[in-house]
Image (cartoon, rainbow, N blue to C red):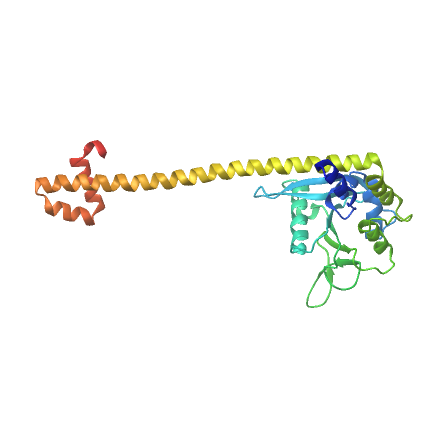
Amino acid sequence: MSNKARIREEAKKLNPIDDLMFRTMAEDEKFCEEILRVILGDAALTVLESTAQYAGTNPQGRSVILDAKCVLGDGRKIDIEVQRADDDDHQRRVRYNGAVLTTNITDPGTKFKDVPDVCVVFISRFDMFHGNLPLYHVDRVIRENGQVVDNGFEEIYVNAKVKDGSDVSELMEVFVNDTAYNNKFPITSGSKRRYKETEEGQQTMCEIMDRIAREERSEGREEGRREGRREGRREGRKEGRKEGRIEGVARINRLNSILIDLGRFDDMKRAAKDQAYQAQLILELLPEEA
């Protein structure tokens, strides 16, 4: 099978739960609006802006790519993440992404009361909390009295594993099942059908996959070159230290030979224990090497 044909076959297997298809679909505000209305339980919710693959940076310069950043009509900022594999501490991922998003959208000098409200919606194939629920809201709760308190950060976890007949569960079926479409979610279903079944959509996905593959190969080659340069520098430093030790031993041998010829055995004995005195003797007797 040719590389082009292989890419096409892989593209046909993609669903909205996959980063590549989700990020492509998330370029449409109406798609984000439709799924957030279901997940947040607000039929009047509006999305003013959506940015797929939003790049944020922490204060140390480490960047993170959010699958989609949305701005709601009420001012809230939403990070939507999709995840297939239960292969990391995703609660900490949510915490980190929320912190990076907050930092990147908050102007320096902003009073804390004006820090924007942020919500992370984490969509996964797996039931992270094993509670047999398709939707979890994680709140901050005072341990001593059970009171829920709000600091403007919200965590919502959605999964496609639990089937309970709810709208959220039916939406997740569209996200993960190759053949699932639902008239309740016309924008999501229509966008998925376009990228999975039409020639235009398939071509778009193939071009994106091919571009990503080329970028990864290029990044791999560049990383290989960087590692080669780092290895070269390490070898250079190692060789330099080795040559320096050899030259140092040769210099001491020349100094000791001179001291023996001069009969200055006491100086030679003292220099063996006193590096400062040794340096003084080199300056005196081997000035060209000092």
